[in-house]
Length: 339
Image 1 (tube, rainbow, N blue to C red):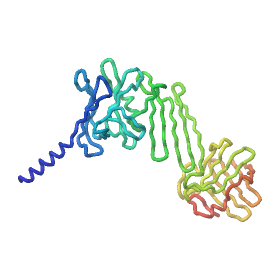
Image 2 (cartoon, rainbow, N blue to C red):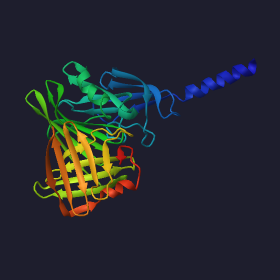
Image 3 (cartoon, rainbow, N blue to C red):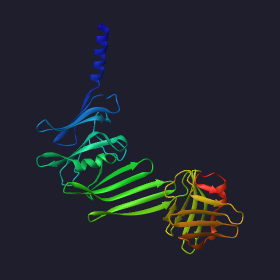
Image 4 (cartoon, rainbow, N blue to C red):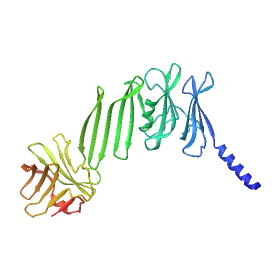
């Protein structure tokens, strides 16, 4: 029993000795910070961040957290390091966030932003001290880390992402101490497509404009057949994605995507029908009320478009032809039925 008590006492000493308090100073003539980390041996540890008045030597703000990360500089914690979007972000930041020429506080409250990134509570300076702002705090909780401050344009910028392929950049102005989005740029990369949607504020509403482009040089993309339509200057591209699915894109003269099919890829869904007749090789697919048939023969390259039974033919420029429909026989694609 004596040895058990000694063991328990030794363990308790080990745990308590890991608790560390750091003084954060040098960012203000009026305030300093005190950070307590319960266990400095862990990457993330419970603890607290407090702000003290130098004049009163009194705590004026305090935020407790289940997860604080410490980045030491010569054994010390430093304020106002903000390496966006994924770099080091200090536990204490002190700056003018609402552009009223008074410095405010951003205090880390854990890892609650995107992908377990640092998040902050924002306290705005007032005549009576510092007031918690739910609206400003939202910018550090619903996006990736601390927002960026542009003092020249008096705007705030945030960044967020979803997986590998969606990134969004937002710009805010401050009206009556409330951040208001004035521009949101969302980039979505999927298969060969790159879609950029720009939302801008027009009065009280956000208006969106979307541009979709294609990059057939991406990994996993193989062009099956492409050709130009001289009458309209459009480009028709059939491409194979990861040897799994066939896709079709029609580009306008400015290289933006006018039409793409299928809209959503569902494996083993027969989107395309390929007729391998020697003298009449053709590929047919339907989107809504419109049916498209591409003919790729030795003497002719054309496309038929039928809407509610009314059909018309579009001749292609054979000199711009790359590939051929016979490439569809080289690999079994989930959404192509071969006849």
